[in-house]
Image (cartoon, rainbow, N blue to C red):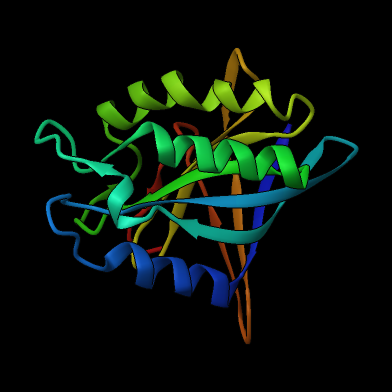
Length: 175
């Protein structure tokens, strides 16, 4: 299946601004993106709708990770999915050079929380994105059991920016 994530450029820009802000103790920030989905033939189009940054008070001090969010942040994201019939994607930023992809900790933690979204919105795709200053990479779950890479990102604005992921899901950092 060909999976495409499409977002307005201004939404991506506002996410990058929010995710780049310093936090009192967390090394990075986290947010959630709501999506609608449409499918035709062998293509699934994920349409970004809104961004919800995690509130400062919903971070938990934990030096073993860049950012740890508490149960209240996850509850709020689950509630958004439940009340709005949308898919939810966890998002954060990596601003270091190299290939853009999730860390081992990111991949491990996704397996713990992304399937929970299917408990409130079983028929919507859910997932995780990682942004850089110039690109995006991500994974989508179509069921609680299996994640797939997002093959293409379309950032729509005055100019259309298209990023294609490698077979492992990673993207060239400089796009």
